[in-house]
Every structure is written in structure tokens, then in C-alpha cells.
Image 1 (cartoon, rainbow, N blue to C red):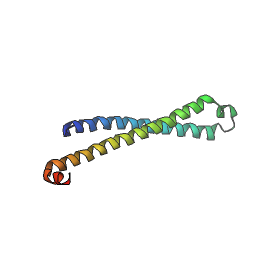
Image 2: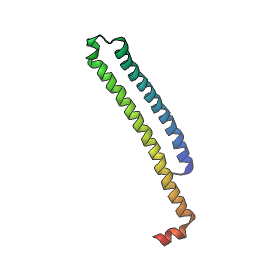
Image 3: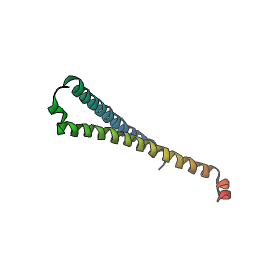
Image 4: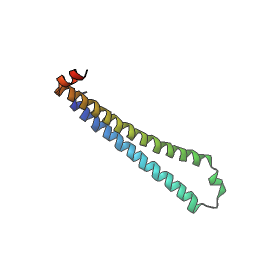
Length: 103
């Protein structure tokens, strides 16, 4: 992969990261809002507290937060690994004699 391909890959990856950030923010807001709503406004109702659909939606929000955070971590790691491998390759290309002495 050359520099141009990498820059294009980073641009595309940044769009995916922005999308993951949006999902992260929306899921966090929805989870916080629903928990707050349940605690503050509907505190006396027992039927809502045992509603399986509510817990399934909370689980979905929590999974969305976890997976979008994990995706952002993986994308950053991918860029970091590529930069490390590219810098090592550049050093070997710039100083071939020193790499031959080491090997």
C-alpha cells in the first residue's frame, strides 16, 4: 500500500469512525434518557420495571456503545500499525547498509 492509497483509506475510515461516533452518542443519550425517565417520572409503576422489551432495548443500547467504541479502537490501531510498518520500511530503504549490518 503506498501513501496515496493509505490517505484514501484514512479518509474512508474517518467517515466510518464519524458514523460510529454518531451511533455511540445516540445510544448513550437514549439509554440515559430512558433510565432517567424510568427513575424520575415513572417511579411508582412496577410493570415498567419488569418489562422485558425495555431490558432488551437497554441491552441493545449497551451493545451499540460497546461495539462502536471497539470499532473506533480497531480503526486507530490499524492506522498506528500501518504507520509503524511504513516507518520501518522507510528506514530500511534510506539506510540499506545499516540494515544489512544488523542482519
